[in-house]
Length: 92
Image (cartoon, rainbow, N blue to C red; front, side, top):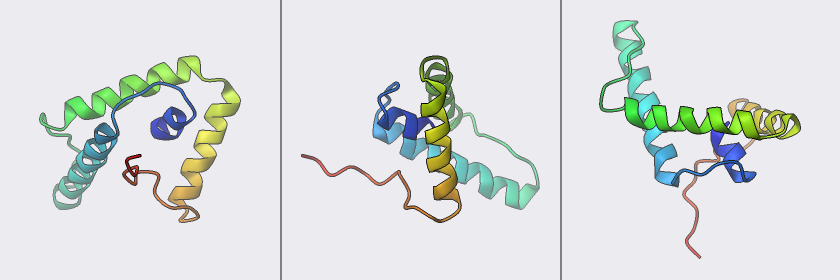
């Protein structure tokens, strides 16, 4: 949701931060599948913390209708109804 809200103009972190956070969650998922324990590595924690801090800021600043719209977009992606928003932007 943080990325969708950022695209609406609420907060900003570099695109690479989202890529790294996605990879960190993939790492955590791989560990969980093997060990049945959810763990975030010390190496991955800072990028996840950065996205969570941004999302806290967004939730305090964005109007509710924007949060609802971001959640709708996320649900559409998770349901396979839209492409991943995390496609690297083409440089202009």
